[in-house]
Image 1 (cartoon, one colour):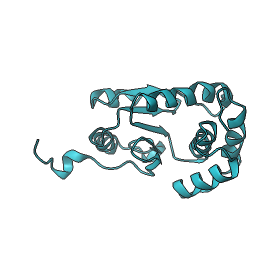
Image 2: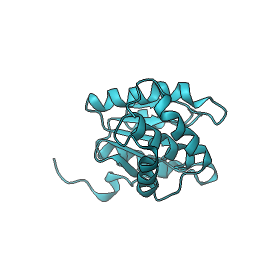
Image 3: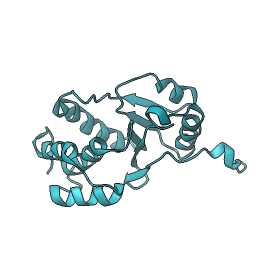
Length: 171
């Protein structure tokens, strides 16, 4: 197989960061969110995701209207909407074991919300606590803050506090 031109490799999504190197990453919504969303950028970023070998994208955004873009570009996806008014514990109780199963099956995952904000940071920190990767909440919080280059605020910290209480937690 020959080298692809730079245009065919796509562009890395904004705020992309590895949670588990070469296995599980997070980013903001491909194409951006809100008024900054651009269809062409979304397509270029999804191409990058595909070309990097991600086998599943997990979308946490409430709306499903852009999921067809993954299908069009032959990227498998899962829609696990998490709305701001949803009770997070039942959703995370299903999401975390699903992520663990997918990783155990050799999948390469990319998870995103609209933006890489407090909620996604809190979910990532809660996952590393729940999974036992970093079972101490203060260490997990510091690690994720460094990884994502942002502080975790009150919304994210509430999610972190849930982690040890979720079914299957190894924290």
